[in-house]
Image (cartoon, rainbow, N blue to C red):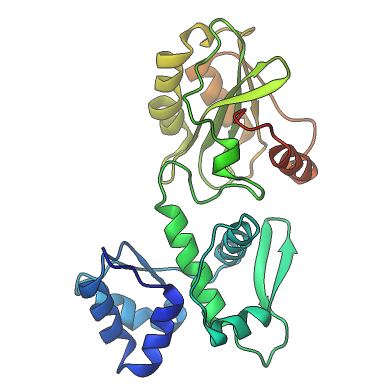
Length: 278
């Protein structure tokens, strides 16, 4: 399989005829998985290339998407997990790029309005696409997360009869983390995020089957299944609580503080985690 740097592709566009022709050539000569493009700039190209079988999709420059781009690139750089070929133009644009922090993470911005950073923006979009297809670890891993350190090389077997802790939220998609405590260490047994699903379907078809297969003793036990749920705007709190209690049982309560107040503490915990405890 041939590979091509996203920045090298940008260099090619300057020398070839049209963007659409280069996208076709790139797709024919390489095993292209996915191409992200800004619909504000390339709506016609996206439509025509999709019709021609090119795996291209819209990636709008919304605040959420731009933050995901910046955070993904930031995580790859700080984790020393990004490798690019030497390029003076790319280096210059990288030096013109700054990171602006917001409550959801880091966003890419220009150091000066006159500087160009298009290549870095394209690189960040390519990184988001690559991370979305990298396997069981999703594209929204937290700052400081390092797969080599925080993911056990062997499957973590649940402690028979021990309490099971569940964190449940519905900020953007239904997301669940299942864990146990073992002599002061937190053992994360499973984590699920279901795009395109409602909460009830997520719990009924994803979370509950896992609990039945792995920690059946905790189901419907108020002493052994202990859950925390994040207060959400998209769904009435009573409905969320009713769904998890009806399907899983256990004892559920809300955190004492909002996520914004817990975020830095959680990130510090991940950064200091002992290898193998996640």
